[in-house]
Image (tube, rainbow, N blue to C red; front, side):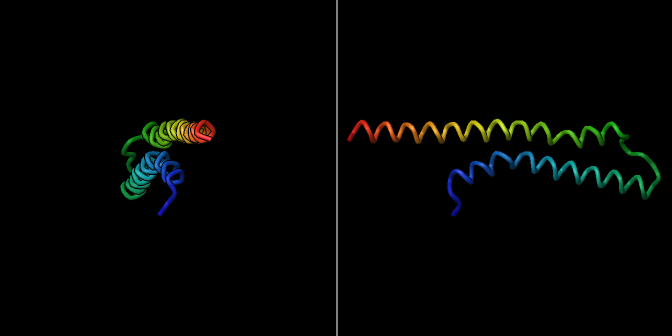
Length: 87
């Protein structure tokens, strides 16, 4: 079983990975259609949007990971204070 801290760290990055995979699939399909049919299905604007879309989730992942680390540190400090108070 995975430690709780590691699991929470990975969960913070799942949305970015999912978005990146979906963007890559869409871009590859668009490029494949362009190569096969010789037509441009969405233009470069859509490809640019799809390439930058995972960045939104990446920035949220940074903040979520940072907040989880702070919460973990605060819990450790609280536990230490409770132990020192009972001693």
